[in-house]
Length: 256
Image 1 (cartoon, rainbow, N blue to C red):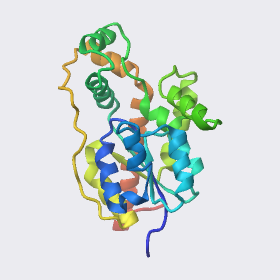
Image 2 (cartoon, rainbow, N blue to C red; image 1 turned 90 degrees about the horizontal axis):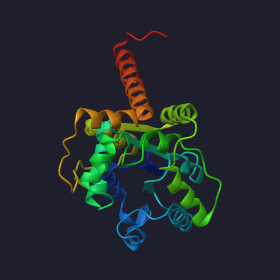
Image 3 (spheres, helix red, strand yellow; image 1 turned 90 degrees about the vertical axis):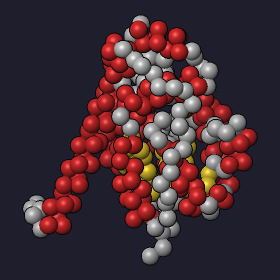
């Protein structure tokens, strides 16, 4: 049977998602992707503001893949049966990669970043996994929608428990969830589900050398990403539990 569902890849930054994004784009064809490469080029090679991406989505109803650094709640703008994909990465590794990205982009210097960590501050947004998965839908339009979403990725979290609970519920609703340290399994799952011929690739390596952090600096990273660490462990545990259940079913040992 031909796969005819739309696909939404919620691309959380610094989770090795660029490689998957490019593989998906190649599989469906550039003409079927939103935001388009033209719109991305117009914004200096970066994903465009959310409201522009949604406008192009509206103008291009025959798209097959919608992807970008947009919160999972954006699925409210997509068809109900859209296939959703998310990749999670170890939160400490992800945060360090994000710091290196900021350094490469000149948003801060290494001395400033390390000093922030020594002072107990994180030089990049905290708990990105929970923010992308658990963020509440924003009721706004146009540039205000984009501005408020941009703020939601970095402003202080008001209710940690509420955000975490929403992230857990959202995580459980994701159709295909993968992990950076096991990308082959994710590619195989997507190919099985969609029939798309995906090619494993490695793109977007960090443009900044590896950082050597002290124990104190690493503790700062962990402390500011406690929600993500809990979410990550919970999602991995559930995936392993589901894999065990499927294995037992195949061997006839599963009993309800």
